Image 1 (cartoon, rainbow, N blue to C red):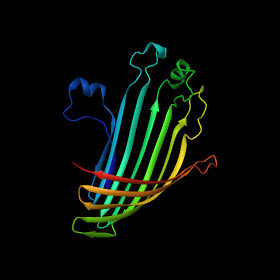
Image 2: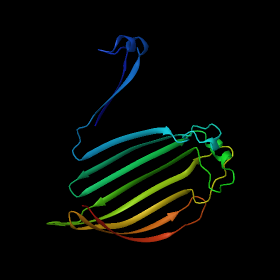
Image 3: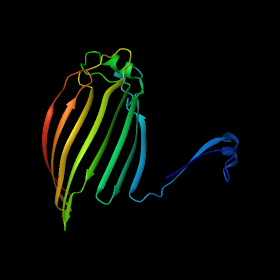
Length: 198
């Protein structure tokens, strides 16, 4: 992976009016040359208020972004993701719906990291045990008129395995342990699943 950050003092081939207004910017160049590595990012933003009269003029702009990576080589499969969101005018929204128990936060985030190892492959059959750690906080940043709700922050350990009897069919089993930073050990869950790709 090669990353280069450089300062650019002009735009080659730019429209003259644009060149007059944009005469200095930073340029980021990333070169990808690691076999098995995939890196990505995304961002989306938009007004969610939709001119709702109940929101007292709040545009309620929601911005979500993430970065993610996956490294797959031989039998090893590693992946990670981090996502964060921000909601403008959260205090106005909460004031407009003051009777609602679960009010909105101005910021929230979540991330996970997972490692899997394909211990057995034979023909179409594939067995891959995995371990995953994830953390999220749906009320990471609170508006001044918001009270933190119980259970908004979680740490979760998951241990399990995926078995593919066919490339388009997967059987899943995992055990999850929830830990909450407030000392509550939370839930323990056993999950069984079946996936089929059409």
